[in-house]
Every structure is written in C-alpha cells, then in structure tokens.
Image 1 (tube, rainbow, N blue to C red):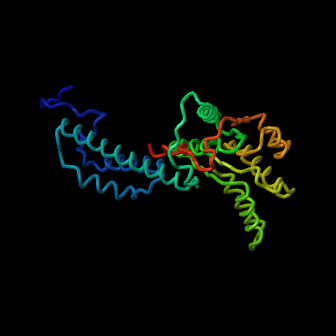
Image 2 (image 1 turned 90 degrees about the vertical axis):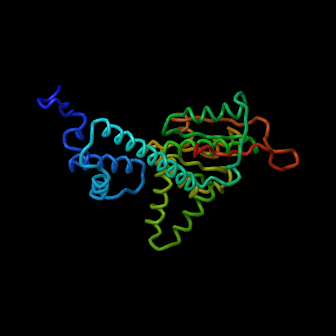
Image 3 (image 1 turned 135 degrees about the vertical axis):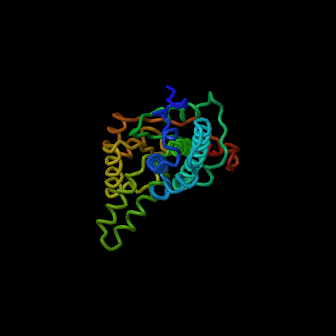
Length: 285
C-alpha cells in the first residue's frame, strides 16, 4: 500500500526496505543463518560478530527495493557457491578417511544387466542398519561393490571405513599390550562401532580363535544395536562362510540383512593379472 508520501510502504518480508540492509538486526540474522549452514556442512565458520561486521561493511546505507533484491540474489548465489564448495571438500575428506585401497579406486565398468551390477543394486537397496554378507569366489568384484557403496555414503556425508578382519584383530592386540589395555581396547572397538558404514573384507582370513570370534561378534552386535550398516566380505561359499561366522551372526543376518552370493565369472584374466574392470569412485561427482 502506498504511503502518504507516495512511496511504497515497507514490506515485512523485505526488512531492507524499512531499515536498509545495513540494519544491525538484519545483519545479525543473516550471520546466524550463514553460521548454521556452514556448521551443517561440517566446515569451520567465523564468529557471528565477525560475519555481522562484514555484512554491515558491504551494505550501503540505503537502496531501492530493486537494488536490495538484486543484492540479496547475488548474496544467495555466492552463498550457494560457497556451500557447494564446502560440500565437495567434505565429501573428499570423507572419501580420503574411508581407507579404500588404491587398486579399488580405479575405473570399473559393468553392464547394467550384469550380475555384478544387480548385486550392487541389491546392496544399495538395503535399509540403514543392515548386516550384509558378500561371499563367493575370488575376482568377482566383491570389494568393488563395497567401494561403490562407500562412495555413495560419502556423497551422503556419512562416515565410512574399509578394513580387513586381520587388521581389526592386529589393532586390538596392539591396544591390549599398551598401558590401560582394557580402556584402549574399548576405545578402539568404539571407533569401529561409530562409523555409519563399516566394510570388513577378508573375513575368511582369521584364525577363528575364541578371542577373535568374541571380538568380531561383539563388534557386529554393537553396530546391530546402534543400527549401523556392516558389510562382511569373504571368499568362502555361503555354507562355509555362515558356519565360520557362527550362529549369532547368522541370526542377525536373517533378521536385518542378507547374503549375496557372487559366483559369476571372475573379472581377472586367466594369466593372473588384473583385467580392465577395477573401480573408480564417483564420490566427488
């Protein structure tokens, strides 16, 4: 509605038309919004007072509604660019921390109607908190499936870790030998339990001692309780793998996951060298 002077009345949705974009209250609100968005992306941000000062310094004392809208649109575009860059950096950091072997970061090509691609879709279709067993002969791309799933988790800003069963047991034994062995061992198990996605490769490469079985069962049960996805990979066939992992694992698997048998033709060449099917992740795409 026009005012008595003939100028447009200030719009409640556009505080700058009433007080100017250099309004301390408006600048404070913008600073709070920027802080919240950056924290959601997991990036460092300046104190609200610093952001507020920068906003006031960049804002003219007065401007028309059209100029205000243009400036706000430009500010939004710049924020979107900064947030997109921050997200890319966050995804890259998560991927680097996931410990995916370099060999499995190379390009991997599989036809959409191939058994490998169908297995990948089945894994990705499992709900959060699933327990999944990838089993079958060597060279069928089981670890490549895991690498693809990790890349997807990184794009969703979820923490992931690739490791092997023997690496877990070696780290636990090292923790037991240090000072405060009990607390160190508990802390290490807590770290493994805390990832949104945990890949345990070479589950068949273990001594199957009582201690190893207890540690593995404890870790899987803890992640099961906290509804975090765990994928185990083994070169054993289904029956042998389930017998090796024990009844507790099999029961959890039946309840909240499944077995995916990877028994199609190996991607490796018959001369023992790797074929051209190794996987490059799209974590940054």
